[in-house]
Image 1 (cartoon, rainbow, N blue to C red):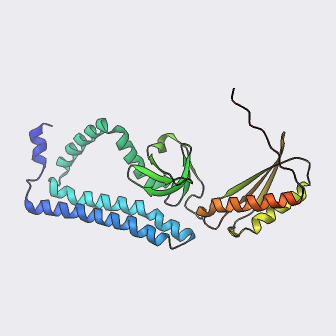
Image 2 (cartoon, rainbow, N blue to C red):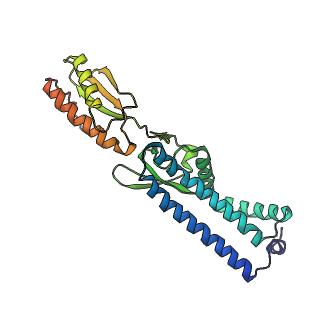
Length: 267
C-alpha cells in the first residue's frame, strides 16, 4: 500500500479528538501508577495467600488498562473498519518485527507470563542463575530483588530459552533447607531427632507444613538436611540462620564432630 493510501486511513485530526486521546493516555497512566503503589501498600499489610493474590493481580490489571486504552484510542485515530485496520496493522507489524525483534518478543512473552503465570509478584524465582523475589512484572521485563538487595531486570524473552525455578509458585509455602556436614562416627538417631526438634522449636516455623530431616552418607562423612517451611517466604534466611545456629550448638553439646573439607587450591 502506498503512502497516500496509508495516510487516508487516518482520521483528519481535530482538537476534540486530540484532547480525548490525551485524556485517555493520562487517565491510563494515572490508574496504572495508582495500582502499582496502592496494591503493594495493601499487600504488605496482609499475610499468606491474600498478600500474594493482591500482588499477582497488578500485572493483569495493568495489561487490561493498556488494552482498554488502545481500544479507546484506535477509533479516534483511524477509520474503524476492517479494510483499514488489516493493512495498517500488517505494515506496522512488519516494520516493528524487523526493527524491534527482541523487544517485541519480550512483549509477547510478557503477555504469556501474565496469562500462564510462571511467576507472580511475591514469588521467589531463579532465572539464569539469579535468585530473588519478584517485585514487579512489566510489559517487557520482570524485576527481582536478590537476597543481597540488588535489583535485577530480566527480559520476559528468557521464557523461551531458560528454565524458570519457582520456589513458592504463588503460595506462602517456600521450603528451606539447612545443611550439616558431620563426621560419620556419631549416633545418627540422636542427631536426626535433635535436628527435627530444632526445626519444631523455631519461631519462624510454619506448623501447617511438614518437617523432614534427610540423612545421606557420603564418602567424606554424613550429610544432614533439615527441610521445613517458614511462616512467610521472606523469612527464609532468618529461618535457615536460626536453625543453623541452634543446631550447631546442640550438635556440639552431643560431642558430634563437624566434617571439614579443605578447598582444592587453584593450579
